[in-house]
Image 1 (cartoon, one colour):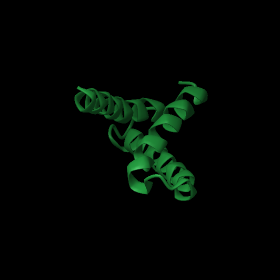
Image 2 (image 1 turned 90 degrees about the vertical axis):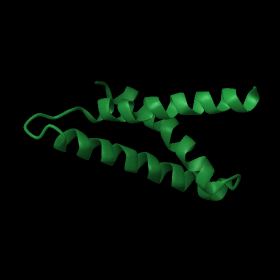
Image 3 (image 1 turned 135 degrees about the vertical axis):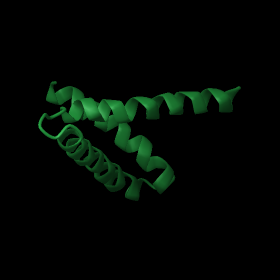
Length: 83
């Protein structure tokens, strides 16, 4: 896995998680988005190292497994609100 792909996905996931917590206030949004992005990467690394203990799952794969259902939920929610 490449580093750019992992960071790009976290760069999309962090702000989407931070917006409901901070609301329209941009002052708090950026630090919260950065902290949540870092938390997602650390949690993915810990899960990747501990789920199958002798082997290691790359953090990017775990982040993708966490983020894909989240984005599908966001798409589903936006379509149901707009309909």
